[in-house]
Every structure is written in structure tokens, then in C-alpha cells.
Length: 320
Image (cartoon, rainbow, N blue to C red; front, top):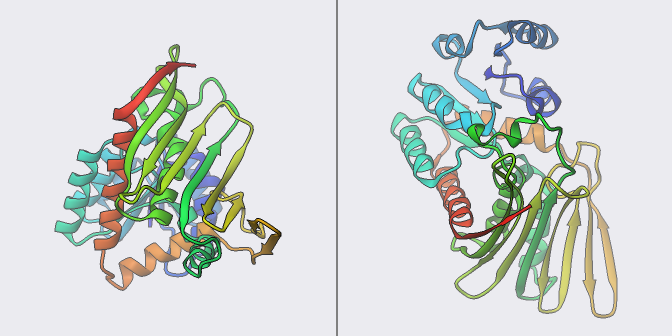
């Protein structure tokens, strides 16, 4: 595995997980700052590359991880695919549906994997909740609600820069959107949205979206950079409501607590801790090494980009 960039998410979460993961050898790290690349490489016992192109030129690199700012994901993912590398790229792959379609087609034509790093999907808590819903614990689902918000960022944070794909929708908003598809299926449509824009920065800093299935099951989604921290979702059904806190970024030591509220009682279930960061790294490695079918992941990438595109296109814009 080669790494294009030493972003915070890579240093805090992904590289430590890859160092533990089966099936992955961290071999090469690149950064715009050569000294940073050398320091990170020394920490993980691998080599430091001169630049990103050096990583792509190396014949012994099978795959690359791209943790660059959102606005650079598509460019470097495309370059890596053209160099014959499998790609694990931070979410979102891109900010528009058309580019996602093109990149997925490039990956499929080359027999390569291009995986969006939605780590939360690889925590066992979500599969457990989906199984509970399928077992009828809440009756027929009526509403899915999800929120992911964080406090305001430092003024110079890259996520406030529109030219680099900044904005709350593409950073924290994509999590609730992806979770809605996970629970409600592949036929979601956008019924409406609101984006609060910071006119000084030129990016959205908060937003809301309403999605619906053809049968009228709705997804109510909230996200932003102007909130007390919140990371949770709930499924409200005809007989009960099931909810989960710390839904999207639980640390490996966190023991999830699932709450089921019905008319006459409340139940709480504590689940074992899980390591979603290592899990997705190992999933990616297995998929590549075992030449697994890329089709389902390809469709998920394109479907997600389409929904995000439609949220943006249909949003009522208000000034923050």
C-alpha cells in the first residue's frame, strides 16, 4: 500500500489501523512536505516517496490510499487507476455524480477496486440494528432520522475552502445520506433540502435533507459545522423506535448502546466494541487479493454521488 498525503484522518485513524490489518503492508508514504513524509514513514517502518507521482510509478505498489482534501480525490484516484493501482479513497470520492460514474467505469474497465472509505459501514453495530429491524422489533419502518454535526472548525481549516471541495455536505453530510441508503434501500429520492451558506467563505456550513422511498418511508437528515457534537440515528417504526448514539465515528474501545423505545417500556442493549477502521482496511485487502466482485460497491459509489448531487441541486440556500 502506498499513501498519497498525510492528512489528519490518515495519521489519527487509518494508518494505525492499516499497520494492524491483515493483508496490508504499508510500503510508501508521500506528502507535500518531505519532512512530514519522512517522519510518518519512520513511524511505520516504511519508505518516504519524493512526491505522489513517485508512489504511482512504483511497480511494487498494488494499491494506494488517498486521504487528500475532497476536491483532490477524483484527480488522484483517476491518476492511480490509470497507473494500474487499486484505490481506497476518503469519502466522498467526488462532489458530483458524473465524475463518480466516469471513475467507477475506469475502475471496472481496468479490473481494479475503487472503494470510498465509509468506515462506519464496517462496524458490526449497524448490521445488528438492521437485523433487529428485519426481525420486526419496531414493526414496519416509517422514518429514518440521522444527525452528524461538529463544532465550528479553525478558521484556516481546509474544509472551509470551496476550491478544495469544502463544505458541510461533502464532509459530515455524506454520512447521514449513506446511512439512509444502508437502511432504506437503493430507491431513495430527494424530496427537499436546505443548505446554510457562509457568504464569507463560500461554502455550506450546515444543512438538512428530506429523502423518501417510493413507498413514502422518509429519511430526515441533519448535518453541519456549527453544532454541539452529535453523531446518531434512529429508526421509527409502527410499534417502536430504535436509536444509536456515537453512530458514525466510534473509537475502537467504544461499546455501542442500542436503545429500543416502545409504548410501555425501554430496552437498552450493549454491544461489544468493534474496530471499524481496521475492518474496512482488511475488507479492502481481501477484496483486492481475492479478486472479489466489485459490482455492488461500484453501484453504491454511483448511487451515493447521485443522492448528494440532488441534495445540492434541490437545496434552498439561506445565509448562515
